[in-house]
Length: 401
Image (tube, rainbow, N blue to C red; front, top):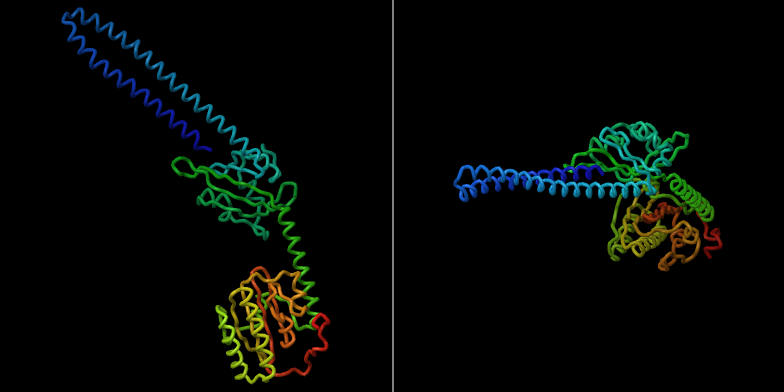
């Protein structure tokens, strides 16, 4: 916005200089050639003096008319430029005033020079209480980070935009309105520069996203409640054998890996089963349990390869147990499908899971499952030797039949 007046001032200077140059060139040509012409045409000193006087008067009249014409032309150009500038400013003012985002413009000292109606609504101040006031006092003193921590001067908008010339894209703050209401404000700020590129101010767009954040939080809470309900339901239905968890918790439970593999090609599945078998035999896992363990590992790795096209497998040892963790970055499973995945024979989100998770649950001592939009992680726990109390297949839910 400040560039327009500067540009017009420069244009006016150019026009004034051009007028002076035209006058100087015409005058120099007239003086140089008119005197020579008189010397050629007249030899009598009285005639030369008479015509020199007439020439001077004609020069004054002609240059006066020329200057008047040039000045009138420049005045018309200036008036047209001022009219265009005024219309441009009016259009800009209408755009700023009607935009749904709050607009706040400050000068180099951080003083608010322009504010629109939407900004009044967001900030809770009348325009007269905002204009010519410090943005730091109005915005900075009433803002905090979303976690409630104070905003230091080094992290404030004024410092980052005006002193460091940075553009801030969609930075969120908690804003404490003067009426006591706390709202979430999304700010997008950029420095204003003059024709030379020097920073002369700051423009900030403000958006009240309080309602959006409330809806997001409610949706998150509903999702968390839903997942917790499914976790408890599935844990009870499987008599504790399947626990819905998260990938980070699974990694903590697993501890350091004693072997790792990447699933890239279908041939990798057989290599993983073979090497897991060898390690289980070295640790003297009972032979029937090795067979069951490899069955579960094969099902989990095959699922990962079919659904995600790749995956990562790690083997962990804890006391007298082995745990295989299979992780991928596929599409994952929706929370609504977890009961079917866990309890329905042969259920698959894509129709290619074979016996599904029931096969894994029927042989493993415990299974941990984490799934979501970022992928799926399955951990299969198998003790080296049978426990005294093992889950009998007769005790499985009817949906497994």
